[in-house]
Length: 358
Image 1 (cartoon, rainbow, N blue to C red):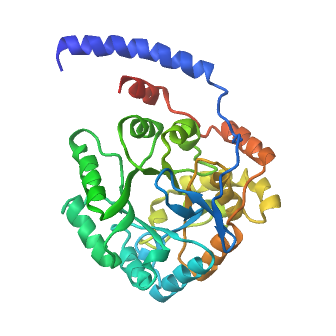
Image 2 (image 1 turned 90 degrees about the horizontal axis):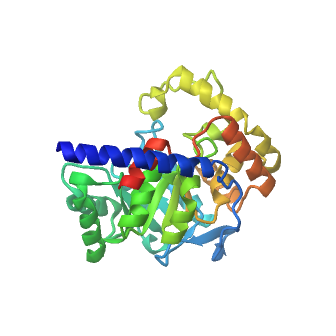
């Protein structure tokens, strides 16, 4: 970088820091914990509300089958027969959306077996996760495992930029080919959402959101709505902790369980925070129902993907939780608690500067 460019950027950073700081101070109380409108429901199937997926024309169940667990390499071993039965029960209860990826163990293969004779009943989403073969070749292999000639929503597992920006062009080419009907990315922070809304023509995004991690979604709702993006929510149960069954003594000993890498301190801190939201059980009947009902309460959300491995989980998630919303008073209290606990609600100063400079 030239000295002149350093000076220019240094001066810009100082100016932007002041502007960002001013905006931050003036928006310090702008987090809207309670949506102004209710989610728009376009139809109901077996008591399962359906929502529009952005501007795609797809109508999807508001709860989706998260197929990570049935792959057997992330939350412990999975029984194939039980996985197939869970998928079938989800369909009976009105679920028509499933999310998977090539890196989810045997997930795509199990799903491919299940979809035989019922492909037209399901909206299938999967992802490119940086495989050495490249995106196009990877999708071809995924289509073979899924036993279909197309996927309905194809994502890159992160936001490619810089040297990887060509992946967005490759996504567009796959959409034009018909092998991916719609395309998007999985995101992690507000700055990435800002980039997508301003500089891409993607159809949808996947973002994390739960009672303990409201950021980045809550700070970017207006931008997402203006862009008309389809929104998939992941991690609504915070790796299962928001189901409320884990204690400070819980340990994950299966090496195939990603949570085995959690430290004792992480487990204890997460359990402590979950306990702060126990008041939601009184109305919901369970912590899991309350936790999933939180993102379902926002109209910008198209679908909340919930991990399912067993039939009873399908019955609980799709049979008893579909349609549940938190009351306005509960959402207000949730927002207050999130602030009191110091949970991240807005972009950091560094992130806001990066956004303004981009």
